[in-house]
Amino acid sequence: QSALTQPASVSGSPGQSITISCTGTSSDVGGYNHVSWYQQHPGKAPKLMIYEVSNRPSGVSNRFSGSKSGNTASLTISGLQAEDEADYYCSSYARSSPPWVFGGGTKLTVL
Amino acid sequence: EVQLVESGGGLVQPGGSLRLSCATSGFTFSSHWMHWARQAPGKGLEWVANIKQDGSEKYYVDSVKGRFTISRDNAKKSLYLQMNSLRGEDTAVYYCVRDGGWCFENWGQGTLVTVSS
Image (tube, rainbow over all chains, first blue to last red; front, side):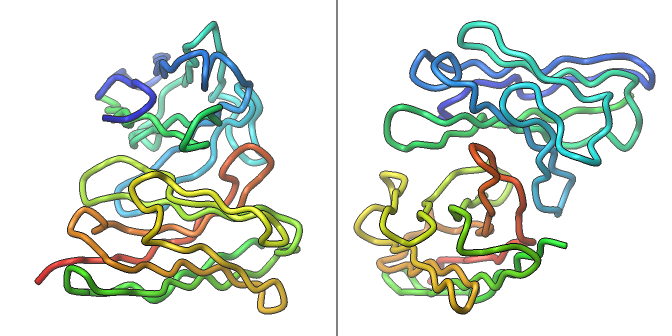
């Protein structure tokens, strides 16, 4: 069982917006702003999409945004495109062992 | 361009050992924490271990403590993971990851470790 809880799957039509949640505790998501999100296409390595809750690395589309409220972080993808279909993972620094935890992953399907 | 290239994976019997290597380029290796993460077939990501810039601090997920050792050679710009007493549940793709300051900024392509008799 993963330390952070994500929905197993979400779906949306092209052009729509979707939000993926990532729920932890006050010892990880709620206690730090060190929450990040990763996109992984089948057979590929993960790619950093959001860091420090809401920051986008250079080159990542501004259709991707992040936020946090209490112990739950969220990734929102607006203007869905077919290329967004992938698995998405959240991660957080944690006060306990292990110091880094991931969510179980969410499969995004673009209908 | 940041490049991380893992090697050393393969098929090993339960109880056996493997040493993974990660050759890096395109950044100042000695300035970054480095991590190993893994992904079992069809499963999610799991953080495995990390190491401070000078190697003075190392942390591990509980399931590998006492069996795996992370190390680095800053002169060779390389990261290593010595894996002993391997178990079936260690079967996974192992990724070398550059720390970006509280995030996993760059990932290698991964190397597959299969533990099976």
